[in-house]
Image 1 (cartoon, helix red, strand yellow):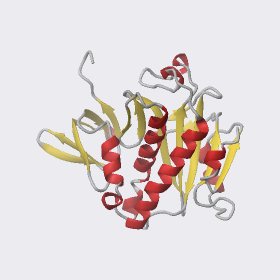
Image 2 (spheres, rainbow, N blue to C red):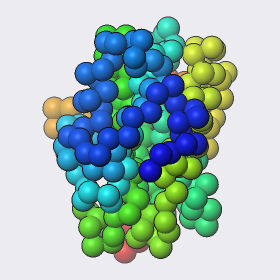
Image 3 (cartoon, rainbow, N blue to C red):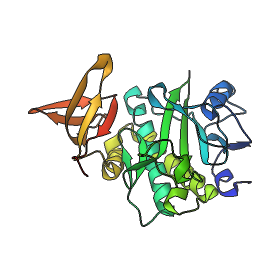
Length: 256
């Protein structure tokens, strides 16, 4: 598979037959800025040691999913603005997936999982290097319903669809580049439009959520908004809490 549409957008695109982790591979290349410039991309259909947020492992049968990592060098100068990068990736991937699944509800679960009809189809992991960010995403494409790791997961195949990988990647890269370019120029997620785009796609807003916090603590309440710094605002017992990191579960009423 040559991926001509994605190659036309990426500064460099390497399609590898199999690897442990595209993020780990791209981090290893990040010190060579000439060979691996901004918007360089690694792609595989066989990732054997993928990782997600909170050090979770991510595996899929060969050919059942697509893993893509993007090297970002043109970054906002303000470190606070860089916190929006995973959220930008979530929106960009959600829009790329929605393009191919127009009859389904495609949304982002804060901070960056992509859901289709409430089930996870994609996870995203951003990792910083000395002067760059490596942004990884794994999308369940050809994974059958029987291969899905948990009942809360889904895939293109489980939905009766065939993913067009080149279109998916090119749409993702184009949207991601546009969102991050605007953020880098303005240094402000609200002014750039990223805050509005994330809020519009975020399935977490309005939901009763349970947030697992460090040191074994937890918080349950209603997610009301995303603040200008990208934090999730949760109202609980009359108080508003700004959550910058944590494992968020959408709490559904029994029987729903």
